[in-house]
Length: 299
Image (tube, rainbow, N blue to C red; front, side, top):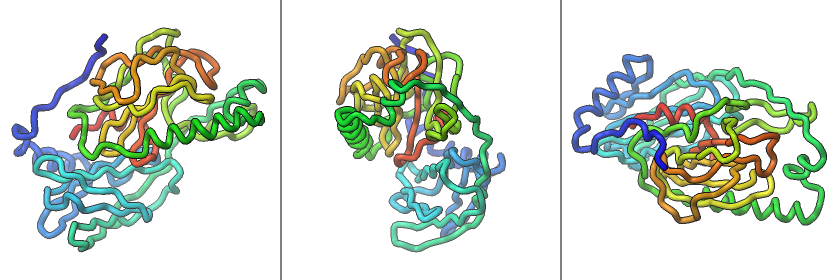
């Protein structure tokens, strides 16, 4: 089964001249520009909310360089004739002004204090759960505690070694259509007690509804876990991973190469779930971000 794969982009040799048009358009639309040794750097958003993704475009000479913000480093990656850096603004960061430092491959640095991170208006989500459900996320039984520990190791290994190359060539797509029941970033309360922040989007759909891979990549996890039920994680390269939780059936195995739109599983209510839905999340450098930014990501 194939689900709408969205727009396809031409190969890079046909886009060399278009790169600078994209950079100029980004600047004209309100992004920022920084000059490093005569090379313009375009920044997609100078005032992002927490939980969002910033894209930085630069001349190819900056490939293998890096950008530093909030004492965290993010690499410039070669992408055709240009260099691209992705900056994930964690929803745990504090709003405020941050210095952006560009470092080239020779170690020379330039700074621009223009990133003003904004507070996000996240929802609040209240769930009433019974003791059995609570045991899935905060187990007291020693056997379940050990299973939870092993599950965390599996998930960590699944996101440990991303492919260096970009495995996709078009923007990400939604894995299915349905009603959003809990949005990204929502503050979660269980029985009126603070539990966590929601790291993805919950999409309600009937059990058995097909779930599509949101982009091309390689399956690094396909397993039944205690809290998240039947779970799939896909590596898309560049340290970008998508995750699909609470499935009723897995249609792929670890090591499978999947195409954007390919059916990978079916909606379910396995693990900690109060009803049938898909929990869909995307992360970069192990920082979870609003999946909408990847749906709009055009490189």
